[in-house]
Image (cartoon, rainbow, N blue to C red; front, side, top):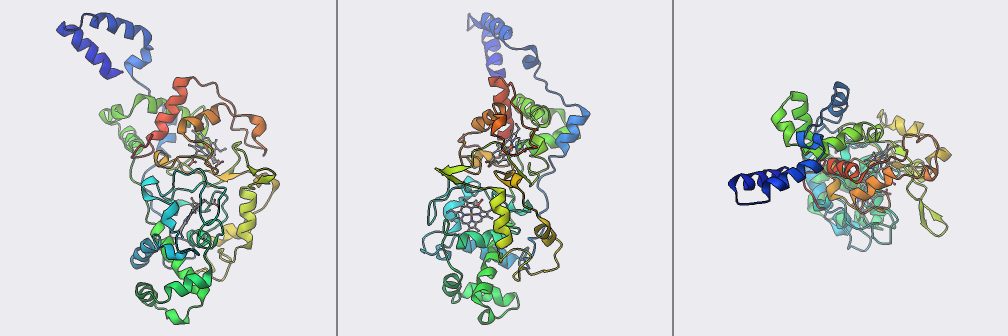
Length: 397
Ligand code: HEC
Ligand code: HEC
């Protein structure tokens, strides 16, 4: 709008456009005064809330129970394995088949298609090392367990431990890696061998840190009082940000530098996956976690006394966990459409509409009273979308 205004004014001054001055008056009459002054300001309290959404990037903790975490040779091996179709039962599916790097390590399908039809959307993997529970339902308590899971899942790669171990036992680069870790490859059981591969992939995934975004730049400029820098951040995004940290209550769950509290909530998305079939969300996740021989309480963890295992020991299961999903990070959203655990919303505008028009009777667990319908105009909804877009470097839509 600003550019057009300037152009209209220039044209009328130059006398080339006889409707220039008239057009300018008309435009001025239709734009609210705030729009002309272009100034959304933030109070001290709001500035403190914005400060809590950074800094970025964050340092990534080690993967619990994974002695290979942070080892450069393991990261390099993991990067190769991530692209290797031989980890799958059919020999045709690699991690990268679903987790595409140019799509934020997710994919445009609503729900994944692996060895069988999945019921869930492929999660993006940027910044995955900052999570403490993995999967939409938190069914894994470490990154290496979350990496082993798809290899063995019937819906995803449908591999088996002995097949995977046998396929890679003869690979020189794997043998070298195991030796460099001070172990004898021949002495490892098939399970230990396959766990070693999953820990290497997890070491690689931990290095995936997404870059700074226009929002991060604005936050820095706001905190340092750089007015020229602040002016470069779009006015619509500022208004959206104000609502995000304010009356829309989004920061209650999408909080901190990764825009997620890492916890599980019900936001009223459907949980039926077919006639008579439901996806239990966190409820199913806790059951899966407890039965998983590869959880942090099991014998394959490299550090049995790891204090991280406490979260697994103390997790409790309740009816309210039904229909809850892990709050997703909001970074790189422009790359990871469609949205939600079942990929049921195609656009960011669709997500904002879901929250604005939320049906409280759809919230099947109690206690999410944070979410209430909001009367938002078209412009106000678009403001939230514009803000969310500034949490990505590249834009797709
Ligand atoms: C068929 C598609 C498909 C393949 C192949 C696949 N994934 Fe996934 N990935 C998914 C889906 C779907 C989810 C969400 C699963 C859930 O919530 O149960 C997911 C989730 C994850 C997560 C958890 C992300 C988070 O935010 O918590 C990690 C880590 C992961 N995958 C890594 C891998 C690795 C490593 C491989 C290869 C060994 C792989 N995936 C292969 C589809 C796939
Ligand atoms: C009560 C906690 C909570 C609040 C408040 C909340 N969210 Fe969410 N958000 C979630 C959860 C949980 C999901 C995942 C739900 C699912 O997969 O079905 C989600 C999903 C999303 C997604 C999709 C991300 C993806 O990768 O699929 C976006 C975008 C989003 N929320 C934005 C917002 C905005 C904007 C607001 C404020 C209007 C907001 N959220 C308020 C918990 C919350």
